[in-house]
Length: 71
Image (cartoon, rainbow, N blue to C red; front, side, top):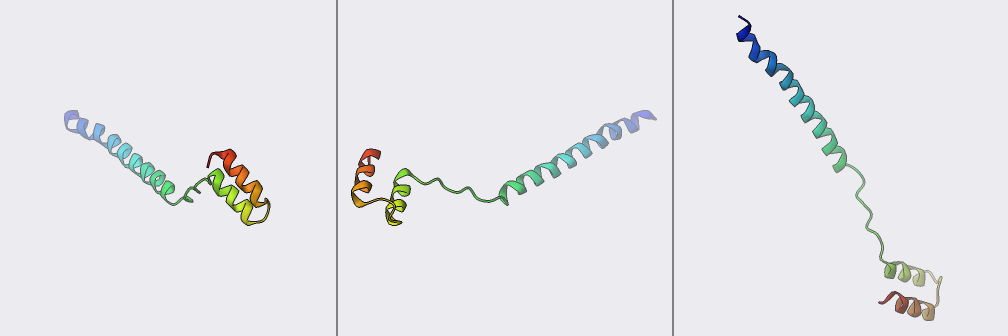
């Protein structure tokens, strides 16, 4: 009599553990995909070019800084 229920008693909790695990996995995976994409970091040369374009530094300063950076 108990032998027939033994499989179901073990399979029932296992079923719910799997279902809950899949739900958690789906939520975590979806939240990672819908997040804001990472902003690529600017290289030092890109920053230097922007500063020169905005007029913050002169051409001579730009060339010297570029040389100092190894570009």
